[in-house]
Image (cartoon, helix red, strand yellow):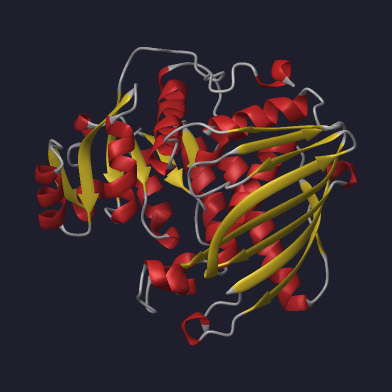
Length: 357
């Protein structure tokens, strides 16, 4: 088993070790300030130079508290204020607001790292891709799992034939949202801001995208069941969701997700010769469990939490902006997830499978 796992934490994607990408962070919620900002500051190729908020006063205050050079309001950003002080934007607003900031960034000729899911609807995601392609600016969707070393190694193992031919995938992602953020009026429970729903858009997308990344296969059909029983979830269909996917080559996947359950994350891929499981998978501290024949190995890495995953993600993005290599999770990659999620909600509403083109 040793030869399969050598080089576990190497950055196989890195092409440059010098240069700096200066970021403007847009949307100053807890994730941006507590996770993204320190991740950039501890990265090798990035620094934060501008903070952008709906309130100029808030942006200026947080800039001062976090030793960032400039804080500006949304209107100032759209007007191009401080545009010579940053090279790229990180968009961390609620889903339905992503497009307007990406459009302005494209007009200002700035590279874009946009949080997942990339927008609230397929149509708006398509517009985002079109705007960035027309302006010839890089667009990456922030799938931090793709640069986690455990996921990277799992991808290499699958490509090298460790599991044989992939047969099935099981993914789960759940969290107690109302305990984490005790506000029934929060944006993740508002379909006008979150998009098609809450559990699949915010949590199920991890299983979907990570499976796509690991398998390098796309779903050809999906089927889903959804239910919402808690009063706080009255406006969204998927407090609980379970979905069946058929990927290319008839690989079967089951995915479950809930925003109102005990926290738990895992992703298991079973093949004709072996099995790979990420457990825990998506909320930091991702661990890799490998089984083949009579041998099982667990590989863990110390202190690789969500901030470290984000650090890797920002360095990957900066590496692509500074160098010539293509971005893998680009806008069209993120757009495919949006089409899959739209199809899942359509399937749940219609009560039948939905084919994907």
